[in-house]
Structures are given as C-alpha cells and as structure tokens.
Length: 172
Image (tube, rainbow, N blue to C red; front, side):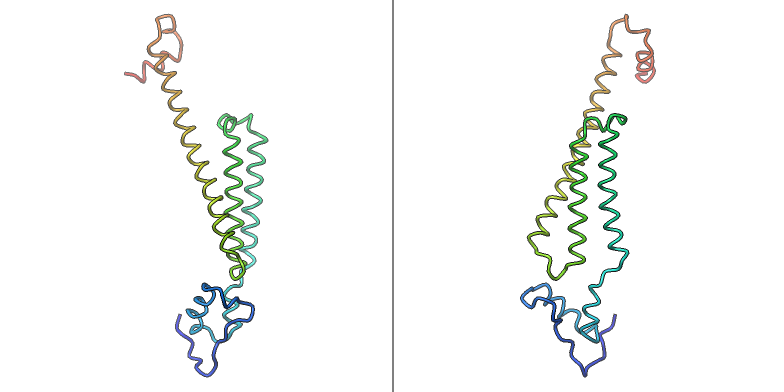
C-alpha cells in the first residue's frame, strides 16, 4: 500500500480514541500517511459480520461439545475418567474466544489487564488438558503393556486363552 498523496489535508487523531494510549498513538502515527481522512482510519477497525458469526459459532460449538461429551461420557470409554479435562478444555476455549473477540472488536477500549488475564487462564487450561490427555494415554499404554506381560509370563493354566495366543504371536 502506498502512502496517500493527499498533502493538502491532514488526518487528525480520531475523536473516539484515547490520546494517552501509547498503542493507539503508535497506530495513528504508522497509518496516517496511508489514509485520506479520519473516517478511513476509523474504518480500518470495522469488523465484518463474518467475524462476529465465527466467534459466536466457536462459543456455541465449545458449549455444545462439552455438553454432549458430559452427557454421553458413559458411552465413550476414554471420557469416563476425563470429565475434568473436558470442562477445563471448554473453559479454556471459551476464554480464548472471548479474549480474541474483544481484542478485535474493542481494540481501543479493551483493558490490557483483561487481555493478560484471559490469555493466561485460557491457554493454561488448554495446555493442562493437553498434558492430561497425554498422561492418560501413557497410563493406558503402560496398563496395556502390563496386561500383555502378565498374559505372556503367566502359568500354563492360561496358555489356552485367546489373549495368550495373540500375545505369543506378537512376541515372536
């Protein structure tokens, strides 16, 4: 994008913006050469309807997926022990979505404290959930290996079982 060749008029600092906010002043200084009027600079912050719809969609999908995962947890084996992880993941996704939405729509008035607070809570919940799923998976792998070794090293009494024969085939 080339700087505007409109030298006769000066783009003034928008009235609704906070002049004490260093990020807004920096944004104004960077962009004032590329716009022809104050209205054009304000329009740079206009968000399309698609972004509003997208954030609402993510919010609803997060809530619905958590609701159905909790409701159907007895039918899905891996979810029986991870109900807390599902709740953490849902709240983490919701916090990140809300944070992103307010950053984009309320850029000039969104407090920095809320940004850091929601970012730290949202991402930490998602990371805790990821680590929890990894640990749960490793625990299941360890338990499977334990049962496999128990079946292979067991007495002759168990040698006729299907599990023992399958384990012998995979051992060789």
